[in-house]
Length: 115
Image (cartoon, rainbow, N blue to C red; front, side, top):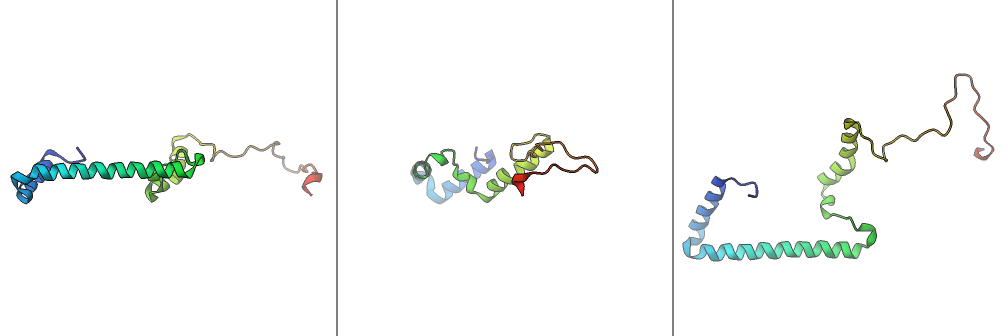
């Protein structure tokens, strides 16, 4: 639970008993639960408001993407991992030449629109 083992949870309960006492510990735990619930609700409301006010172009926006580690992993490291795995994405695919390459000594065709 939350990355804590049983020994850590037991230590937290003992520390809570020492700090708050056996009479006030249930009240303190209840108040902490209410506060955590309110914080989670505020965060969800802020996320929903942000997505609603950004418009339809940002419908798949996730605020977690603003974290620098997540941003780097998503935009830089995914392309590298795809290259290592042998899969390619559309952004990293090479552009195909419209005409075959010229052999040695061949003269390229003249293009009036390019000059």
